[in-house]
Image (cartoon, rainbow, N blue to C red):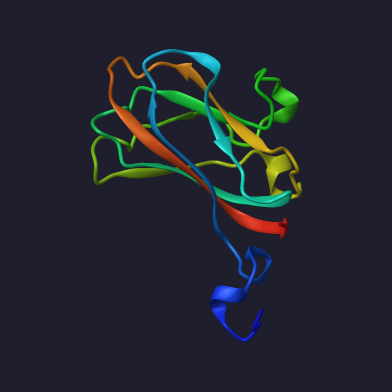
Length: 136
């Protein structure tokens, strides 16, 4: 491999890129793991999680992201967040990271979307996790 080319570099050579994306995700029902976000990399740092690309208004939905599928509060990555600004295809919202996420290197192979309050419709959106891969 010729290491002087960008195409030959591993994700650890770059910072803050999409380590997971899932969608379209429907927010019509509540539950601990309505969607699974498969992670690229063995260990990673979560820097930002964005909800975007909605097919319509999902502003009533209240969601959180966890590193376990059981909704255990000790595994929360984002605070419970109402998606108040995600009203159409051209709007987005960054979820607020929980305090532990600011200092944790994660190794879970997937993250889980918990819907606390449903959107009240069948509109969908994409969730993207941005971060740094520590080990590929």
